[in-house]
Image 1 (cartoon, rainbow, N blue to C red):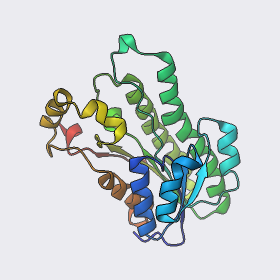
Image 2 (tube, rainbow, N blue to C red):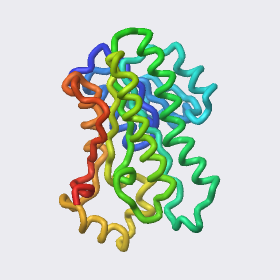
Image 3 (cartoon, rainbow, N blue to C red):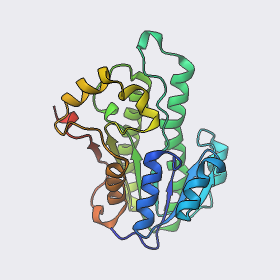
Image 4 (cartoon, rainbow, N blue to C red):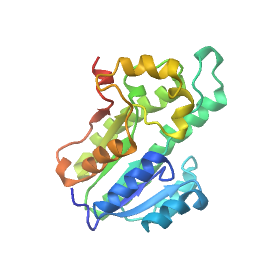
Length: 241
């Protein structure tokens, strides 16, 4: 899993899972470009790790094109994510739905589109890992927008694997269970939600950021050279029920 001499872009790097992935990639020898919505949000991670920060709006095609068109890459982690609002379908807000889809699905699509162009032109192959969710694999109460966005991301993973495989570019998804980040704590940290959920999970606990980062780095490495088009649950066995 040595990633020396490889340049990896990580979107959502200012978030918990993204930052853990950046740290592990650095430890694996990669040259990392940490992407996020602003330089201010990226500054603590850049100062800690010494990686290059790259701020752009991944919901804007023009912004993604400007950021990535001439950026040589060997790998991409589409980790930027928006949880939206957990609540009943009948009360869902269309603006929230559109925002979740714009970040989780359209953003990953745009980054993959422009990053893969430069990867193809370089002729060295590469790997892309999309950070999806267990919500793409099973129905979770109140997760209409989030689940839809991640299910679409899994479908994009399979299509991209099919189209980019001839260029030796592998594309996979990881589908984590809940990681107790600030984004998730307000809902999943409530006892009436947490206790029934964990009682159905064979391993009986939430995941850590590092437990998500490790499979991501594996899928970027040559240790996973024959793996593409895979949707990999990292969920303590929840979706095996």
